[in-house]
Length: 356
Ligand SMILES: Nc1ncnc2c1ncn2[C@@H]1O[C@H](COP(=O)(O)OP(=O)(O)O)[C@@H](O)[C@H]1O
Ligand SMILES: [Mg+2]
Image (cartoon, rainbow, N blue to C red; front, top):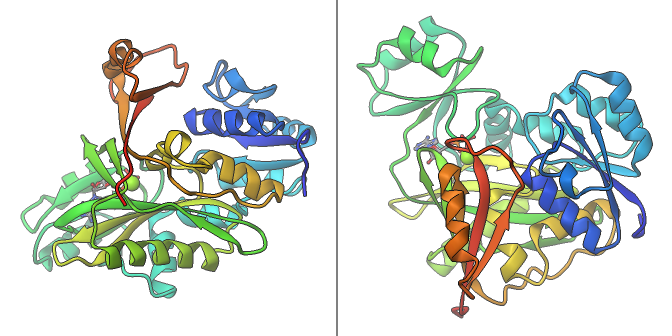
């Protein structure tokens, strides 16, 4: 066990790192951030920071030297960087899990192998292969870059009449995955924390509504038939166990019109759809991550209120002015100096009395 007083390293300087650092500080840990930019949201609230590129081996070694355990807050950190740190200090979740979640094909292959349902998919290696696949396509599909996509970037909606060369170019990746288009009823996610001894704490499924492919609102909990909610939690726990995860995992799923669950994406880190747990639960997703990687017992995920979390994207950040005077609203701002369209600037969680 790493007792409070130890130093937690976080690779990545974004808001997920910031909120993890705040949770760590509350438990008496000190945090050292590795970020590629000065004045990052995570570094603003941490005791130490290394500012360097992810391919700077000396800086990665200095970072590892400064910490007792390390984690990551961002999927697209080059695997090589994480491995260099892992050679010197424990990294949790283990780097192999990050590598699965960095590649949509590896991720879906892993899910298929362990028997978890996903949308039908196939690997697409180039524009010629895409042309062939589109010719045989029945309905609509989504072409996604296998690597480095987020917030809908690197994705193109296609059907049998789509010009393949153009879609391939728009997708912009070196390898693609073509997924059947799921005409879902809603999108949900489940967050599960898992300790080294296999103990798990699960939050209920929440509903996620996207605008322009960016998460806009999370409704916690999702309104689902109880057996669907239970099944969603079981799927997330099963995946965490099969990954031998130590840390926090978010599992994004589609609920189809006939009530089936299809897993869309995995994120082995705290997730935007879990921000509500800071204000509405006994233990937040961020504190669970700190507890899991430090070998403390997981906290209770019990929720004392239901919640609606609204992301503040770009200019929406200005609504903090009204929200700050609203007693039902909890305002979180990430300290980002520059407002850009599509940039996550903060979020507001509104608490509502808990339904049974
Ligand atoms: N196969 C699909 N069918 C229908 N909608 C999809 C499909 N894949 C993705 N989407 C939509 O696009 C959003 C973003 O896709 P996702 O695979 O989660 O990538 P990312 O979140 O990394 O950008 C999803 O939340 C969903 O709304
Ligand atoms: Mg997603």
